[in-house]
Structures are given as C-alpha cells and as structure tokens.
Length: 398
Image (cartoon, rainbow, N blue to C red):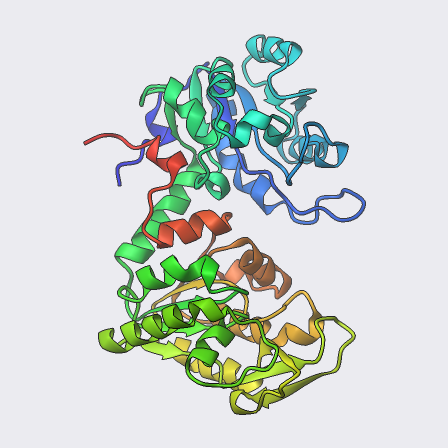
C-alpha cells in the first residue's frame, strides 16, 4: 500500500487543514475523561507548527441531530488543546460561516483555528460536494489524521481530498502509523498469530472473522457473541444474547477453522445473572449448565485460564472486543484477566476498538500494549481487507 505521508510533502509556510478525531468521552459535567485521541494528534499538529504553517483543525464529536447543540460543541477540546500545546487556539463559531472562512484566510504562521463540530453541518455525513469544496478552499494542503472515521465517506474525510492533488494531501503521522500496523499485522504477522474477538454481536464482526480465519493460527471468541457460537454447537444458553439468524454462519466459521487447522477457542464456563443490571445476583456456571432464565454476561475463571494458556506461545496478538459487560464490576473479571494476560505476553500486541482501548486503560494495562488503535469500526474494516475511503484518497498511484 503506497500511502502519501505528511513527511513527504513540502508544507513550509502553507495553510494546512488537518482532519482529526477528537471524539473523546466526557463525563456528566462535560469534562473530558480520556484525552488519548487528542494527544494522539499532537505529533502531526506540532510538525505543522514547526514548519511555520497556519493550521485549521476539524473533527466531529458525538452524534448531534439538527445543527448546533451546545453539549456537542468542541469548546472543551479547544481548552484541552490549549493546555497540551501551550498556545492559543482560535475557536470558530461554526464550520463554514462567513466569519470562520475570513479567520481561516487571515491565519498567520503558527496560529491554530479549531472549527466547530463537523456534524453540525448536515452535508458532512452526506459527503456533500459544496461543503467539501468550501472546506478545501480554506487551505493549501489537506492532512487526514483521523483513522477513527477513515472508513466513512464524509465531506471532511473523503470529499475534501478530491480538491487536492497527491502533492498537497497526505496521511498524518497517526493515520500512517495505524494503517502500517494493521496492514503488517494482518498480512505479515510473526507467528503464532492469535486473534481475540469479543464484543456483543457476531453480525458486526462477521466479515472480520471470515478474513481472519485463513490468516491466524488460533482464534479466541468471548463476549456476548460467544453465545451464538455455543448455541451453534448445541448448547443451551438460557436468555444469553444470541443472533439465531447467524447460527449457520457461526457453524461455517467453526468448520472453516477446522479445515484450515486453526485452533478455535470458546468459553468453557461463564458468569450468569437473571437480569442485566449491576445489582443483580451473579454466579459462575459451566456452559453445559446455564439456567434457562439466566443470561451469560462474562467469561468464567476456567475460560480465562484457558485463554491465557492459548496466548503463552503467541508472537502476535490482535484483540478486538471485551469478554463481557466490563462496565459493570461483577462482569468485568474475565475481561480484566485476558487484558493482563495480553499485556504480560512477549508478543506484539495490537488492541483495536474503542471499548477494548477503554478496557485496557481501566485495567492499567495500557502502557504494556504494543499498539492501541484509535478507531473501532475503521480497524475492523481494515481487518476485513477493505480499503478505507479516507485512505484510498491518499494513495499514490503506481
């Protein structure tokens, strides 16, 4: 994959539009609870500052429905950027208003303008041509550093790139790093290559599973999606989450693994409860004895040991999706044990997906992972073998 990178462009003194991913979690008081995505963009921003560029930053934040909503404003992001970069950040009132375009055109070297939430503009998610062209008119150079949305054909991700030639658009340092890591991991891993796939539903990860099976040596399935596979093998799973329509696909995946000699791991015990809430009574049980009116919400201790043993000889581990409802303390133990096992392995460890990234931060294992991706959906589509729209726009034609 021949990706144009910012380091190969002449950006000195130019106006640079950087699409970032500042979609960070906030608490009930609108305080940023995890600024990892903001910090991840700093290398590209600082590189542009060092090259005397004037800088326009753009990002989405949350899911606003009808234009401006105060709770989705990027003002808290501007404050955090000011703290991290130790310089003033000009905060735009909107995305492409007359005054905003005026400020963008009169930016001096080293100055930074942060546009308001891209999704305040209806045309953003529709990849509107007029919006794309207006955004492009703000700058001489376009940089995409937003891996987390590069699987979306949006105006500030794909549409805008059409208005720049290959010498004036590129991937920022973060995007280039994400693409290289996943491309290398999936196409040229150091073996044994083990993939851990969790989360609630099989449907969201079906293509990824089909694409991973021929590439891995072992695959570990946990989380809610495991119950579809367990039911496919004839187990009674009570009221656990099951996608009945995908049972034939689950059987197909298990058979595909068997044919290719891929070791396929499912939970051997689970933690179950009668209701889905933090106050409910929970108990452990083997997969053969899940009560009829109970639901599985975490892998059990025996499964955690089994999965840990499966990881002992791994040289590459790719993990996407938690093992249970880790947000509730009594259903977080399985995910935490797997997190510790991945972190303490000697393998190259790649964590993909927002929930998994959040989980390893909560467990304190963040610093012991080789690489933590900033994008869930985007990393899944890369694993599926797709070329992301935001990346395709930055490829150098051979």
